[in-house]
Length: 443
Ligand code: ATP
Ligand code: MG
Image (cartoon, rainbow, N blue to C red; front, side, top):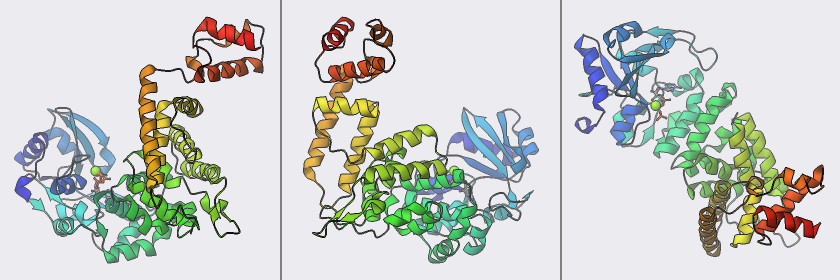
């Protein structure tokens, strides 16, 4: 297996340079796991027994950035490829569940591997041999996530690892080993000590994984510690012939039926989170969820804010959620108006993706809706091509033009909106004079 690992020549060059003057140097962590898996790596991390200043000295011919000198990390740029080099470390005690109180450099590679979270992430490779002290290769082969050492201790040191385990299980499609899993459930309460930013990263990566459905279903009680609103969806029977699944299962199946895009997956995850709070049952025993889209909008806004998402993401995702239940029509006129409501073609396209996912999560799937979505996609392509006017800024008259007609205050905005609708309804051409004439006739 080792012989076939294809690693960039730039990395080999750095390993050879450091080893050439008597130091040890290995690729380590996630990139070795990904090389063994034959998957694309995200970042290239090297580990060495040389101290940061020794690394800088030996590699003085290269461009070097002192990224985290206190923690023993420098980044070397080779042919514009950034490679992180970190000195072997032992993490000291953790008092705040995040930063080890002190970081001690060590001469032992094995000590450095011991501080890593999972066996699959505790592999080192120098271009010739893999150091596999904790049977990580075996676990990769068997698709297992297992803590290095005692899971209870490891999760107590840094509870974020609980979410990292779920994330890897979602992204890689691996199962979590029994002892590791038991410790995760037993210690999930410690996640309260973890910052929103770190939680957000793992939550988002979990949602984007190919196994997001199983991960969210199996570990919702753990995410529920930091996003308690999720728990209400669990096992919530919909008592509705359109839904064979409970709210959470429907949501997770929908996740499985959509693209790996951050905004869409967030919108799918939260689109029905307002359902439990909007439930009512009619006398025939059928469940209803009047106003649930608005409720989901409110709840998801709060969650995304708490997770410290940026405003652009919050606005986009919650807008999709708010309108996820619209009964869209496949006509150009309707879609033009929809874009006006949503603000952009991208947003309209994302709404279609969300509705496709929602439909996928329903049982039975409504095939006629798929045809409708396909038609709408064609309309959106045409609209984009024709560059039709769909927002006030595209209207060929502005506030000043309207002002000169004697309108003032709120009337100006109303007149512009009125003209925009007239253009969307194809009652008037989007040209300055026809628009002004139209307004004169109507007023
Ligand atoms: P990704 O593919 O997302 O980059 P990764 O495994 O490389 O996944 P990183 O966050 O880049 O994850 O971390 C690099 C390596 O550092 C990990 O593979 C692991 O060995 C170690 N590591 C990272 N975070 C922790 C942690 N919280 N506890 C213990 N070891 C960690
Ligand atoms: Mg990484």
